Length: 336
Image (cartoon, rainbow, N blue to C red; front, side):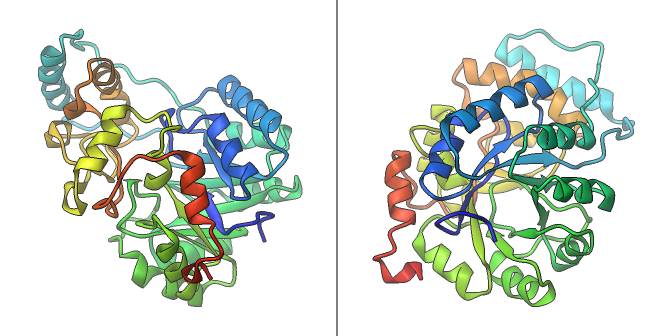
């Protein structure tokens, strides 16, 4: 089992939302902080790992994207770019006429760095690495977590030798972490079915924001919970203030699933950027990067990626230590 005091994992959220200091603070509290490697260079990730290690001696995790690195360029690429150029004109940033895509680092590159730097826990999302890579991580003393959105994926993760499976319900904010083209299901239905199907510990994710959610997940068979949006909506997270404001001003019906921002299904607060045509991930993610960056600088939330789960009706931005106190207050009967 994970060497943590409380059964709580801070979800890895890519895009610079969670800093190494944030991760270390969560781990120091007795939960598991998580760094997101997605989109980072090896040098940047190494520096972030070093900072986490400087700030805490407790376990932490590094999350690696395990998606297909070389997708085919689709026929509608020009039409999609034309639509994005309309937005670029609105934001008064340069239009793109020559569409270029940068290559991404391999799963093996990130895994090798984690082994070299003695990272205690590595988690994967968007895919299931081959058994040999998982074995290399485990031989190095690293605990390995996979991400599933249905029971079939959970079984594959167990069969590949991973130590834990995060089962992510439809309610979750941000990207859906599964890898088979299957419909997502709600967490209430997913937890007991996954817990009955696999023998490895189950981590529940999606719509959990307080002790009631923790207690419900554990009652249904989860060993741990993973929380994202609630950690994002703290003063210490690096999410844009308008991102947090969008969550606080929305209700559960405003958090919708889209492929328009990155090309992969993800849940966020409804805005104009979600109305665009898309190409598959990671191509779309690269194509909208300049738009999302400019929107942040210009304080224009209509063209940002305001990821959020559905459990937000009473959302408010609070301090990280206040959130951790609330989540880990074992004197409250609903925690057990």
